[in-house]
Length: 442
Ligand SMILES: C[S@@+](CC[C@H](N)C(=O)[O-])C[C@H]1O[C@@H](n2cnc3c(N)ncnc32)[C@H](O)[C@@H]1O
Image (tube, rainbow, N blue to C red; front, side):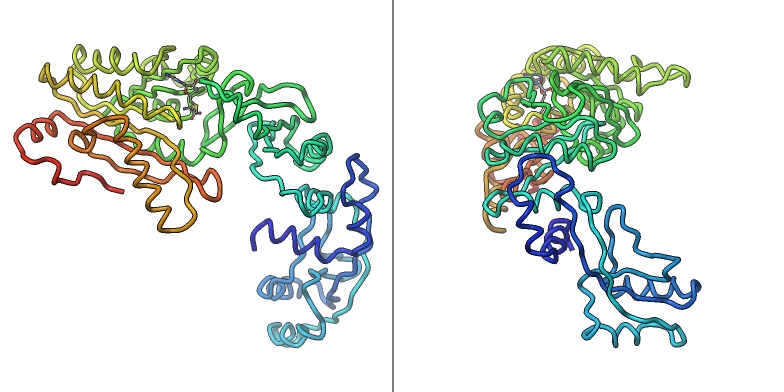
C-alpha cells in the first residue's frame, strides 16, 4: 500500500465528529487532535508465543504502526491490531494460520489518540478541505525541509511549517517554494525562490549524499535532493580513462564523486557563489590527512559553459593531446544551447584533423504526455529538440536518450548522451548517404 493510501485509510476510520472538528483550522492547536479510537486486540497467554502471533499478524497485514503508539502491551499481554481486522470475518482464518497449541483471545479496546500519534501527512489530510490539493514534493536538504505550495495552501503555510518542524525530527528549517513565484522568477543561476515558513531563518546547511558532504546556501545556489540517484548513476558512468568537464557544476554533486574516482575533472559554473561553495566542498571531500590532493583531480572555473567548450575543451584536445572527454550539463531548459558551441568545436577539430572522442551528457525536460504511446513520442520529441539546436546532429553523432525521473505525473527529465569521434567523422566523409544509417538508440 502506498504512503498516500495508508494515510487515507487510517483517516477514514476516525470518528466523523473528530475529523469535522479539525477540518479547516488555521492555527496550531495540537489539543484538537485528541480522540478515542476502538481497535481490535489479541490477548496472549505466554510471552514465548509473541513471535509466532506477530508472524500471522504480518502475513494477514493486520499490523498497526503509529508514531508513539506501542503495538504490544507486555503487562496486559496484549497485541494491538489495525482497524481492518474484523473478528467475525477474520478470526477463524487467523487461528488456522497460527501454530496449534498457541492460545489467544480476540477482543477490542478503546485508546486515546493525540496529536503525537498522527503523521504530518495525516494531519494535513485532516485539516485541508476536500477541494484543496494535497501537498506534494517534500525534499530534505540537510536540516532543511522543502515543500512545494500551491496558492490554496498559502493561508495554511505557517501551520504547515510548524507541523513539519514538529514531526520531522532532523528538520530545523521549513522552506516553501511556490509555483507562481517559480514561473516568474527562475533565473539563469537556477536559484529557486524560497521563503522560510518555520524554524531557523537560514538557508545554509550541510547535506550528505552517497558518502559525500555538501555545504550550501539555498539562497545562493541551486540544489535538488531528488537527483540523488542520478548523481550516482552519472558519476559511476563516466569512463575512468576520460577527462570530465562539468559545464554547469553547481556545488559539485556530479563533479565531486567523479573526481573522487580519480578522474581528472574540470568543474565550471557561471554562478560565482556555486564555485565559492564548491571550493569548500572540495576541501571537505578530499581530506588532506589521507594524502589526497584535490587539485590533482579537480580544477574549478567560473565561466560561461560556451567558452569552456570553445576554449578549454579545445585546449585539452589540441594542446594536451587528451582524446577522450566527457562533458555534462544539468541545465534543463538551457543545456541544448551548448550544442551550438559543440558544433563550432567539432568543426575546428575536423579542420585541424585532431583525434577526439567527445561525449556530451545533456539533461533536458521532455514535453507532456498522457499515455504510454505519447510517452514514447515524448522521447522522440526530445530528439527533435536536440536536432533543432544542432542541424545534422544524427549524421555527426551517436545519440542515446535515457529517462531520468518524473518531474510530474505527465512529464519527465531525460539525459541525452551525444558522442562524436574523429573516426565517426572520417567515416561520414567516405560513406554515402549517411542519412540512411540510424545512429540513435532510444
Ligand atoms: C540546474 S542547475 C544544476 C547544478 C548542478 N549541476 C546540480 O545538478 O546540482 C544549473 C547550473 O547551471 C549554471 N549555469 C547556467 N547557465 C550557465 C552557463 N551558460 N554556463 C555555465 N553554467 C551555467 C547555473 O548557475 C546552475 O548552477
